[in-house]
Amino acid sequence: MTAVDLVVRGERVLLDGQLRPATVLVGEGRIVGIMPGRDAEAPSSAARVIDAGADVVAPGFIDVHVHFDNPAIDLAEDFHFGTANASLGGCTFVIEHPFSNPLTTTAARYEAKRKRAAERAFVDFGLWGALTAPSLNELGGQRALGALGFKAFLPDNSMNFPPATDDDLRKGLAFVAREGGFVLVHAEDRDALRTTISRERQAGRTGYGAVLASRAPEIEVQAVRHVLEIAEETGGAVHLVHLSVPESVDLVDAARARGVQASCEAMTHHLLLDSDALPELGWRALCAPPLRSRAAVEGLWQRLRDGLIDVIASDHCPYRVVDKVRADINALDGPFGIQSVREFAPLFLDEALRRGWTLPEALALVTSRPADLCGVAPRKGRIAVGADADFAILQTGGNYQVDAQQQFGPDKWSPYDGRPLGVRIDTTILRGKTLVSGGKIVVAGGDGRFLSLAPAAPVVSFEGVGD
Image 1: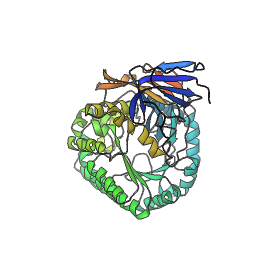
Image 2: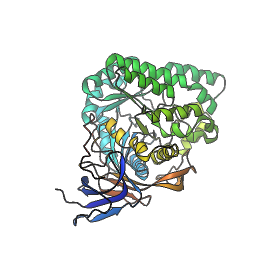
Image 3: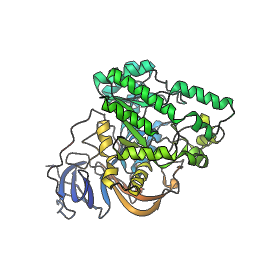
Image 4: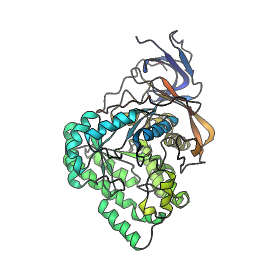
């Protein structure tokens, strides 16, 4: 048996969907044993013992949707800032999308990005591949390097990322039907958007109201319906990113009932903020798809409760303030994106608890379920023997608030700044190494490793873990 070098104990350790008193034994970065009770005797070899007391010991959180290097040019630096903020928010694994400079559309660029990102990353990470017409012949190369999913962007965009046509989607979905994995789709109808945005410009409307009018809910719903039809036609699996409209989730659910391999995600900002707040929050809350009505927000929460949404993520996008404020002059031109990798999980957990969820129910959406989706289970997402020793130790029931000035990096901003918060991340541990303690980063970075994503593995058994 591997020698134990770390012991993590607590009254509320998340094991098999329940909070139990337990003592977790760690050796060489992996969990090597779990004993019932907080007071179990620690092996003499353990150099460190972390007693969480009544704080919650959860698996490290997983964020499957981040943008770290857009619009930054220095990739290594931006991964450094992004993963630092991820660790402050309890995340130990993130997956980055391919909007790099240069765009991550080839196997060679994917490999170069992997190497550079690992130089200063605080947490472990994966990389999604890209699905564009110029890079269709690169899908196999990116898949071999660790890309389980390939991002297709339907609308025109400011990243010069070629929008995917129906033919591109068919070819990409046919590829994943043969080789495994899935296609990730930003679903807003391109032709409809061109028409509605042109309409607003011609009328001289370029403010935040014009964004809401031009990116109306039906534009997302129409695109989701069409993508699901192509997925059904080809037999390929599809993952709909950042759905903001309840009807879109219903379409995914109906498609699954017909046998389509389909999954979807929701973002914290679409669950906490509504369109009435956009004029006040301005550029801080400008995103695509945009914030929706309060009725849509409540509809998303109901579908979360019904189990129709697979994961919660951030869609973190770290624009500089000097770039974001340009939206106050012309919001139609963006830039679109919310900086939230640090805040998204605590905010989601807090709101779920306020709505009567149990903590294990909410934690599943940022731990075990994303791990299963992206192919890193059982190594990530659960506290179990053989898993990486990744932990987020959190305090609940307190009177905290979001403070954007506590973010890591030069541009500190958040649409949630000053928002009351009842959940606080105290400690983040990656493969047995403490990254965050007392809510502060205590390492220099560079401990993060790239993980190749693979088809979902069987979930590890929890038999033998005491009550």
